Amino acid sequence: MATVPRQHITQRKIAEHVQRLGELYPPIPLDSVDRTIKRPGLVARKFGHVIDYLARVELEVDRNVLELLVLLPDVDEINKTFYADVWQPQEIQHGLILDRLQQDLGRTAAKPHLDVSFKIKILGALAHLKPIQDIAKFMYFLTGASTERQAVLAYNQINRGLQELDETAISETIITPIKQQEPGHFAFYQMSATAMIQDKVLRPWQMFLTRVLREKSYHLVGTNQMKQYKADMGGVMVDLGLDSDLEGYAREVGRVENRLLWAHRQGMEFPPYILKALKESVDLYRERLARGVKFA
Ligand SMILES: [Fe+2]
Ligand SMILES: [Fe+2]
Image 1 (cartoon, protein in one colour):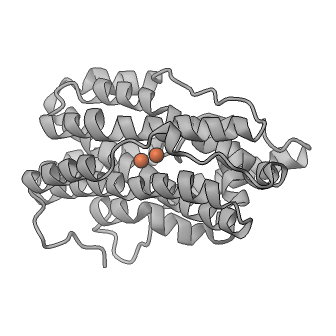
Image 2 (cartoon, rainbow, N blue to C red):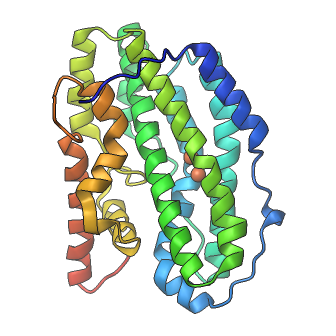
């Protein structure tokens, strides 16, 4: 059964985690990358679209920061240090490095989507009320945990594929260093969300509203609730071989929120809306393929 861990996660523990991440993982310098590509044509064919997608999503970190400022008008010191000193500086380098790789493979530069959506602005306007702010904060942590987990899984898969192609420079000087930084982001969101539950920050009506909002607004990393990106994400899953076990993937990606938000639903392995989002993406991609277009 899903349970909240007994070990109490204090704000101090979270602050120490953030500090450690900053010390352990400085942003990856562009010139630390070995740009050797043995078979660029083959890499582009097998993983070009995946790299395009990852580059765009990483470069969208600047919009994520804006969203955070809209959603959490009273952002506290720990969160501020995390996004300003650790997360944004690391993610933007991931984006720049992947964007250059994409161009080394002869593909066009990423076009990150940098507008904050209307939905976020509405929630942001309401978030000036403390009870809503707490809901927004909890949802922000759940989204962070889910998206960072998706990043970890995607980088693991692409790394395996690049090693099979014997593209050691890309694997060792791009994907491996990026991949090392993602689990720390995941841990930050997981700890922060768990602490809110352990400290009983949310009343039952707030938990209820969070469930409703999650069901209505859940989306996969980088899809920005847009059909074209959802189909692209379906393509990423297919290219990485993640479509063969969507339920297993839903379990991985949804573990944190299944445990924290749906603990009362005994025996449920993942929130159903996660599997629904995965299926929708893969279906949209297959429909597009059937029309003879691989990536828009
Ligand atoms: Fe990243
Ligand atoms: Fe990350």
